[in-house]
Length: 124
Image 1 (cartoon, rainbow, N blue to C red):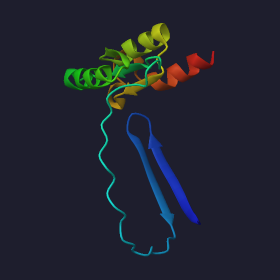
Image 2: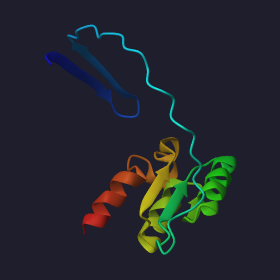
Image 3: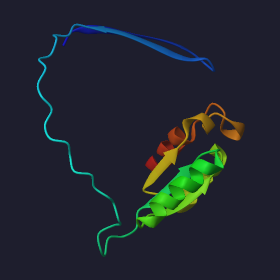
Image 4: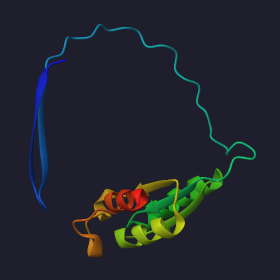
């Protein structure tokens, strides 16, 4: 596939990506039968509970994710800002972080999103 990509970026303003690619129109095919709905009811018996850190400034989002994941066997902790997320990551070492990216640049972590700091610290 040939094409071109450019990016313009300004600190505290964001980035604009522009790309152009050549594509060939696809052939329409009938869809297969719909997948049967499945319900997750829990982890496999004996499977250790994965640790999930939830970082979101909206209480409703934290509570919903905590409830959904907790019901299926995940161990969760929830925080409401980036600085707390960094502290909790270092103390608890979760397997997964669900991070609301809009809180990443606020407060004491401005200019240093929690996810990038956590990666750097995890590498040692």
